[in-house]
Length: 83
Image 1 (cartoon, helix red, strand yellow):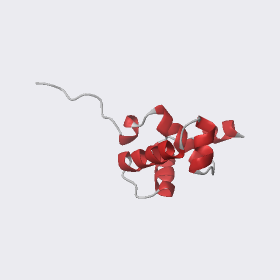
Image 2 (tube, one colour):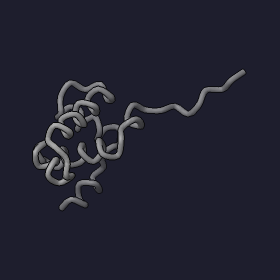
Image 3 (cartoon, helix red, strand yellow):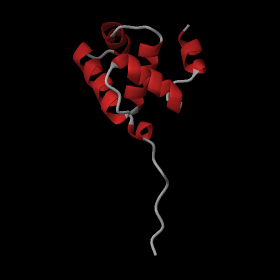
């Protein structure tokens, strides 16, 4: 009998950049400001936010940031590092 592999949470499928975008969003940065910090286009950040919303099954940017906090993608120490 085959045993199942480790249980993966939806947040486990987020790329490092998507996680970074969520951290910056939690810090209050706009998508344009996040794009400037990461040296990517605003559209890339828009896509990253959309990817996070889909992966965490959240309808809005605010909701996905709150869910990312809940599941541990964003921690308080991430935000303190930005200050």
